[in-house]
Image (cartoon, rainbow, N blue to C red; front, side, top):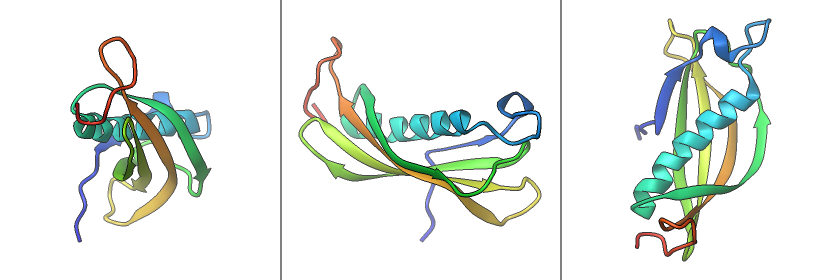
Amino acid sequence: MERNPAMRVTAMPADANVYGDIFGGWLMSLMDSGAGLVAARRAKGRAVTIAMDGMEFHKPVKVGDEVSVYAEITRVGRTSMAIDTQAWRRDRHSEDEELVTSATFTFVAVDNHGKPRAVGD
């Protein structure tokens, strides 16, 4: 089964330390953004991150790598959603992908005043 990424970007030098490894915070931000896109579509409006569980880094991401973020809703409550999110890296000259990290992000649908609302309202 082919899956489509929530987002895909190329890691740039400004995102890395002096050794060329991408900062973990940059990767976490990218995953939060990808999960946020999925959450906003499901919520049919604004959704905010309230938690992130279980992030562990398995492989480094290097400058020039293509990073793909995949996000799948695994639970929907009245106002919240759990979204399993994975980041994969691929050398720009290869078709081989490696799992870099994964985590579960929890989002809450909110109204224009920042108050929780039912998902999809």
